[in-house]
Amino acid sequence: MKEAYILGEELTEIFERNYTRKGAKQAIRAWCKRARQSKISQFECFLGTIETWLDQITNYFLERLTSSFVEGFNNRVKVLKRRCYGIFDVDHLFQRLTLDISGYERFK
Image (cartoon, rainbow, N blue to C red; front, side):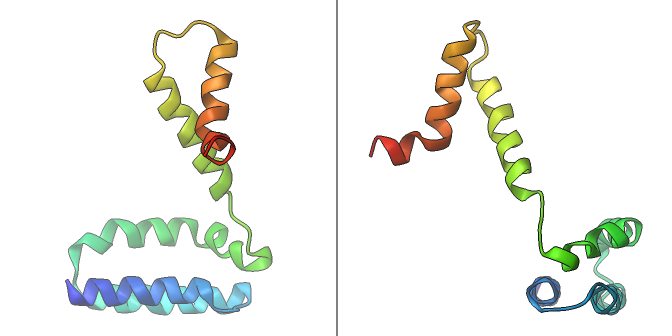
């Protein structure tokens, strides 16, 4: 478990460094090699995903932008849809969405 934690921290550190796209690919490939050598079976699926999407993953190093805000927003909308099942008034649904997103800052 300690080795898995250390590998996870090393991967996070790669994304915090100021690599070029090419340098990031080399660093990630080196990390993948160390993860494979660790023989931690839980990494196998993850390593396959990294290999498949390495070009797209390393695009992050071009501008250091992610779609995390959009992904998080989509997740909030999905959760809200589940919580508000049965609400048929669209205005009320948007009120709930606004409250969930910024209501706590507005109404502290």
